[in-house]
Length: 139
Image 1: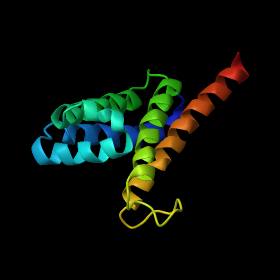
Image 2 (image 1 turned 120 degrees about the vertical axis):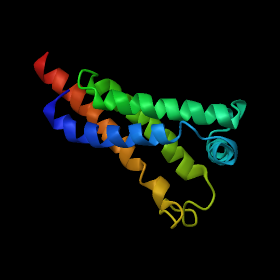
Image 3 (image 1 turned 180 degrees about the vertical axis):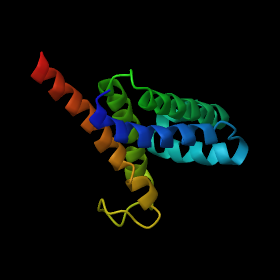
């Protein structure tokens, strides 16, 4: 890990780790609500029961958070994971009714928490592109 990547990786990694750990015990209505919202954006997730979906989401967030916080995991790899995860959240924002004002990309009040996930895509792409540019300069 490059030193310049540390602030980004530490803050986002800690956030993901905390979020994943807090979802470990989701069951019942809470899991069903989260699952229902996800299925609205990505219909293929319907194949997972809500409790299993919550466990998979929790595990994914814990794994990504731990990878971001582990210095020997390459930034290219964690950046790709962060970009993919963030893209899924952006898809949720774009496809969930009521998250945007009219036909624009501007978030509604309800959509602001999801719209901010676009920053995760930007952070992931920054890690990927910087890693690729750095490799190219020194090889």
